[in-house]
Structure formats: structure tokens, C-alpha cells
Length: 272
Image 1 (cartoon, rainbow, N blue to C red):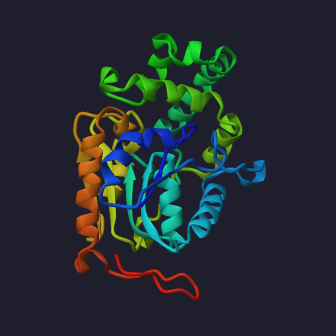
Image 2 (spheres, rainbow, N blue to C red; image 1 turned 90 degrees about the vertical axis):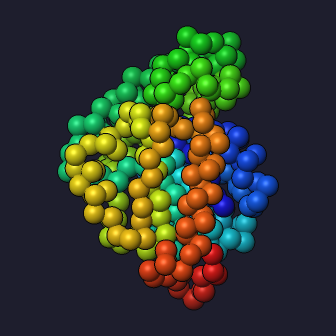
């Protein structure tokens, strides 16, 4: 199972989920290319497709032709791209954009918020752990990530600030992702898929044009609600996320959940 984090973060956000899932599954929480500790990306490679290119290199090095992919936010969008390339046995997308090509005000607002948070990232990089451990620096970031800030482990909050402060492609990636847009062609998704949406996600997944898509999902794609949590639910309720993923995998393993198999050229996809 491959776990992918959101924009500007790193693999650390999955720490508690990995601890719970690794008793039953082979789990890799990967830092995505262009992020702190991940593969380097050149500016022309920025965006969902460039990140997916780098992750495919990692999968090839692991010897994983396919795997179960779980992605939060940007990681979910990258997961859809990897599914399109035939690398996903199943996909669980947590608060990932499934919008349309039309201009979306909420998506624009989110981009502006990331820009406004950039000075905080710069200050944290300069001040180091004095800032990363300080609630005054943590609060604006956590307020966009969790419903119950008090439920977030202080070590996880610190590591979030560290990753954001050292993200090497922070500003140029915002421009690249704005150009890509929140585009997922649900009709072309073949792998068993769960779209997990937090009740208190501040991102635009509850907008009317997204709801029109979610109300007409094919049988092998299901919508799952995560009650009481925010955009990065693993931080405040890892057991809730773990249980949702276990349920997803159980459903994905049933023959009825597999309407078709996307095969990579020259390869067979192993059974779930």
C-alpha cells in the first residue's frame, strides 16, 4: 500500500496510520517529488503529472507494478493520475479535488491562502524549531488542516511546520497546480475507488459542481464520509482513517468492485 501526502507536507503525516496498518499490510508512506526529502523536480516538471512521473520511478525501484494507493489532497489527485497509468489496484482519495475545468472560486481561494501562508513558512525556516514548536506559528496551519487542533500530536504539528518551511517548490508549484486545475475524469477511473470526504474540510469538495459529480458515481466508485474531522484527518483521528481504509480494501477485494482491469502495456496486473 502506497500513502501519498498533501501539498507542501511529507510522509510524516501518515505516521500513526502506518503504525496501525503495517500489522496487516506492506505499507510505504512516500514523500512526493518536489517536497522536503522527496525526489527533486525541475520547474518544467512541476504539477500532478511531473509528481506522478517521479513516483513511478519509486514504484519501479520497489518492484511494485501496481499497489493500493491512498492519497490525501494533492496526493489524491496524483493517485488518480497513477490510476490512469495503470499503477493502482485500488484508490482511496481523501479530500482530493474532483472538480471540473471551469473556474472555481473556492479553489482560487485555497491557492490564495497558500500564498498568504508563505511568509510563515519562510519565518519558520529562518527560526527553525523555535518556530516549528510554537503554537503561534502552528495554529494558522493547523486551523486549515484539523477540526480539533488539540487532538493533533505536538510532534506531528512540529513536523508539519518543518516540512512546509523546507518545501523547495512552494511558490512555483502553486502556479503549476493552478494551471493544471482540479480535473479528474471520473468516467475513466477503472480501479475500485473510495472518495473520502471530511465533514469539516475547508477545501472545495462540498461545492455544488463537485456534488453533481459525486451524486452520479459509477458502482465501483463510492463516496465515504469522515465525520468530525478536517482536511488532513490522519493528524487528528488516525484510527478513523485506518478503519475507513480497511473497509475500502475489503470492498476493493470483492469481484463486484472490479468492473474492468486497466493493464499496463506488456504487463499483467496481479489480483487484489
